Length: 144
Image (tube, rainbow, N blue to C red):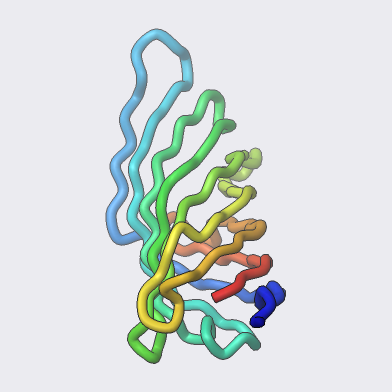
């Protein structure tokens, strides 16, 4: 009888660039904005399955006075052709020097190839290093 595979802990970083972004002011509030952004990046991790995987990140942001929430979907294209994908939810803060920080949780919802039975999740923190560049650290666990 086979036992359930143990969760594998892993972590890494991801450098990303905004590919497209739309922000709209919401009428009725002094500083209420909503936005949609698409970011492309590349992971670095000691866990070989995730090292050099290409990230596509699509998120919506709802901000009032520079604070709010972001949620969306991510898709990773791994170097062996497998994919992994999931959702995320985060809190957004903007510092006095307009540096946006996004911090929250992510969850795998599926994958392909050797990751077709993927499950797991974890935490992440990202900050914009320029108007179009982001640096993220992440950690979590998975089983495939």
